Length: 399
Image (cartoon, rainbow, N blue to C red; front, side):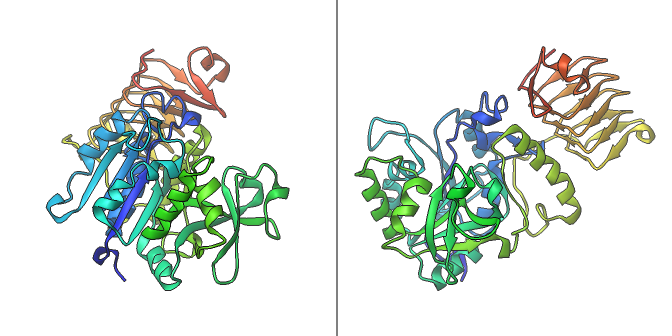
């Protein structure tokens, strides 16, 4: 059954502050943060939507939304609205109350008028800040086959890693029979053995079931959150099923890039995944902004050494060495410089004879000749933000 033939509306929740990703989120929301020095984090869920023929998409924004809104307008405005296909940002409008969104469920409830406008048969609700690919047709097919009111995509991980997620159990029919949001200890995690299933923040609802659950939750004093409130409340009177992500077409990779270390590791994962092309393939492209820039230019080509690295368009590398790093578009690297295990976002300039190791440079950072970053962390602490041994330079930083 193809999603292209169905009347389905998609909401992407993209209003998170992303405080643990500071300073990358100093001026932007988490979904707008660059990933792999080329994409934005939100590009991955949007690409999966478009590739799966989900083409009625509302992105719910709230804090520091300008960067994200600009990116959506520049990169994702190609769908024909006359055919009722669109990717549209929706800022918090306080239509239901004078409050900002108080939780993920409240964000949908405050935009329930969009359900009235479109009257979809089903509603996808997705997070805008995770890195993964998914063919949503697979999840939808199981949802229809099992006649589910709600299908939750679930991932099996170690219990020791589950404290930041909603943890659930399922029976042999994939029906979810218990749910605990962010258990503080492993003793609170249900199920035998060392593994457990977690909620991935990927939901498919029957529209009428969603509306009833939201209306009931709105009348109650709660956190108005899907994990804390909506899912547990639906277990008794609704059919709530889990879709096992590991068994799906792209089930080998999913990451919540909520911290600097998690973000850094996911970027490094991206380099290793390119060899197997599990994230970027010709038949499953990852979309992002297209820039009118010249090809990258290498001066002294025999002396530019690239090892397990990517370089985006418009960059100029001069007799330098780059190892295990991601270089964004329009980046300048001076001769004699060495970049290792680092992420250099667009429009950065690195002078001559510099050394950059285990670092993240946000957009438009400039460092002068002879600069060393990530070599002496005690020295770096005087000037830069450091998290788990990773040096982070904020947007437009100039030394």
